[in-house]
Each structure stands twice: as structure tokens, then as C-alpha cells.
Length: 210
Image (cartoon, rainbow, N blue to C red; front, side):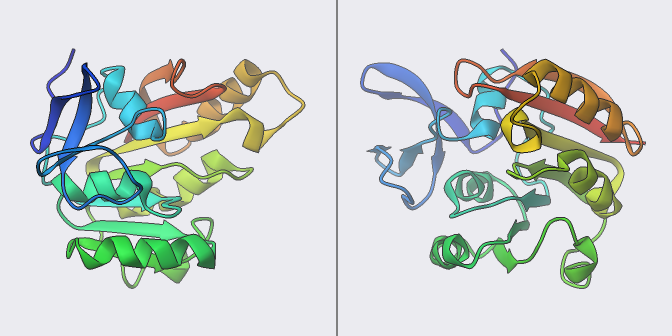
């Protein structure tokens, strides 16, 4: 088991050791004092950390989060990271994301389309440490490749690839192979791993910028 990022601990919830971060509760998660459960069953990044994947998050990194939705996972990321830019396309979850950011001054919600990074390039700083991607759309490799411009030379992509968003008719492994191959246009793959049992038909990918 790899070391956890600074600001992430294992705490006891219902008699089980689970991931937790310090921050204001967001989605009704159980708390232990100032610590709140980081439920890997609701967070692909949480699942990747549970699987000890080398996500490149030690604590304090600058992060671009693509597919932030209503803020479940990105709220945990902001609890232990530096500046965290959260891109979400849909207005309704972005409203929730704004509420999450009220308690996290380092979290910057952006109502933008992750497929069009040129629309937020003037806001997001360059030379970022990590891109976390969890977008439920076709063309997940294209999204990652287009956003590689924001990473530093040794920056890291941490992506959860959802097979059913890419192609509901194809075998998940065939989808994963194709997406990973497309990612090599901009990245060198460090590790891939199924996110089961936390998430079915999802592949965790860690890669570094070429």
C-alpha cells in the first residue's frame, strides 16, 4: 500500500478503516470529528487510491479536475491540494459545486466544456501538477489529450475511463485498449487498473505528459 497524500488518513467508520479528508461535509458522508469519509464507492479517484495506484498526489499539488459534477470527489481533492480548478459542463451540478467552494477558498468552479479547453485557458494556470479526469462522455482520450497543455513537463494525468460512456455496445476491455492507445499521443502510460469492485466497467489510468 502506497503512502497516502498529506491530509488523507484512514479513519474508522462503522468498524472499517476508510479513507477520510478534513473538511466540511458535502454529500451527507459520515464524519469523525473534523474528518469526513471519502467513499471509494462514490469516487473513482478514491478507488484508485484504495488500489494504491501512483496518482501523484502527495498533498499541496495544483490540480485541474475535469468532470467535477456536484463536487463529491473534487471536494476531497481540494481538502488536501493546492489550487484546484473544477470544470463541469452542466449548470445544475455546477450550482452545487459553487456551494462546495464556499468552504474551500482554493477550489475554483468553472462552468465549461472539458472538450474545449480554449474556453478556460485564460483562467486555469499552466504548469499544473495533476489532471484528474472523470468525464462521462464519448471521446475521453480526446478530452485528456486536449487538456495536456495545462500540465508541467512532469505533470500527471489521473483518469477514470468509463467504458459505457465511450461505447455501450463494445466489450469494455476493447474500449479500454482503444482509449489507452489514443492517450499515447500526449502521454506515457504509467499504470492501468480496473476499478472493480468499487466501480464496474471503469479503468483507472495514470500517465505522465510526453
